[in-house]
Length: 138
Image (cartoon, rainbow, N blue to C red; front, side, top):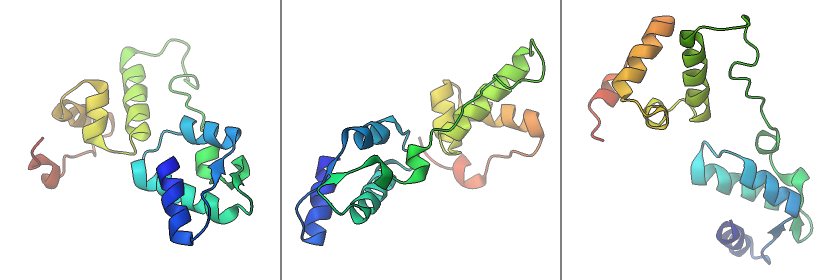
């Protein structure tokens, strides 16, 4: 992060800014589904919004600072859901946490991507493996 802040400062011909403790805490707690580019964009925005040398939590984009509730099975309609219901909820949660990237979700789940596609198609009958992904080398 420090390298990004220094690069941003050079581009803007300014002294580098620092993250406040609570700003750093928010940045570190976020999952960063967009990886490096998303982090860099968030820091650039925060630098732009900050007048002083210390970037406050309030300058961090809302999508980063807002914690999303991850109910998984907490909001389940039945007291004792079946294993299939729990599996579907978990797969859906992992897929969302990986930004919809099915290949990465399969890695996180420890299953082959073809198994993930089969399970997804069983859940809603509409998930098909795109040809472009079928031809990708690992």
